[in-house]
Length: 447
Image (cartoon, rainbow, N blue to C red; front, side, top):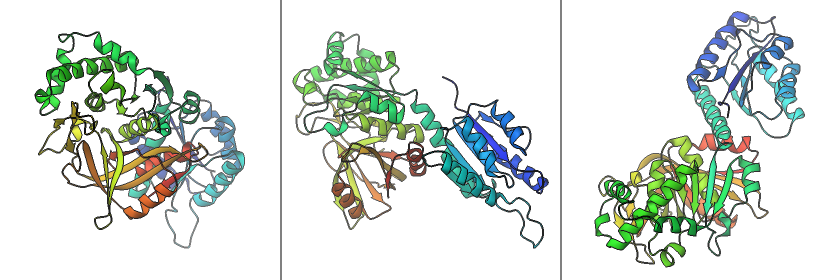
């Protein structure tokens, strides 16, 4: 697969103040190069449609940065759209450098109106827009967010997600179809039966799985207190999952958990999913494929494992929502004062599962790829912070103070039929996710 590529197109005409335009051109090119190593930049401003056309022959962009270095009429945008009708576009207006009662030096804003009019009349779907000079902090932040979102959209085309087993009865909201997943997100979805992983785990001896047991002991606290049979079977299951995702080049898994791993194997898969989350494979339970995809996208943006869980408690006075699940959170998310403690499943009383409250974070993003009543995809995005709180319930939990009123968020999502699984991402990536949704032409509920 070819590398991600940005095409920077500084368009204009030669009758404006080219000294000012070239200064902005150099700064803009430097900014883009600092954000990605594969930016295609012309040798000079593209001051005619013919020069633009010639440069377009040399690029294969996954993001187009169309900048009005000076005014340019709609024919420039039309040329770009004719060559690359589906590539994401960031339209960039430069701020007029001087207002002194004299010459209009760039007239970039009028050019942006011409380009935007052509884009909207030429194709369906939104595009991104930024106003300002490359030296401005807000512009740098906005351009960086668009680049990260476009890169993520590109990387999704090579992602592989595996659904292991079926969703339990009543959990159909997490069930995915391979064609829908590929068409909407570009992600390849595969499905295997849970028994394949169980049978694989059973084929290993204690010696085969010894290295996996040692690795888990170094990450967890109290694993030795788990009964011998469950501890050793966990190591076998960990080896089975780890080898499976390595052999199949898997980016994310949505694994069935109850009842099969309790009734057919005798040991839960919870702690296995925790270890996978820490090694970089997004792993959701209850076979929630869109939960797993939400986790994978969040991890790519933040570089940190995502928390996966249910909203289980609302505190209006504190303006918080607590998220919880049975014990699959990555060990690296545990509070430092407790570490990643091992326990037993809160309902089945079989271990190992994880038992801890998650560490605090000054910025966090709650995210879910969901579907509306007609099956159309949509994004939920909410900004806030993870508070310094101990474990709330048996299992793994965290408490998010939301920027918007927490009660309003709960009431709106319940009334609008959103799913009961969410991811909490360690970091502020709300802008990137919102931009990604627009690039995919999906609606967003954002708080």
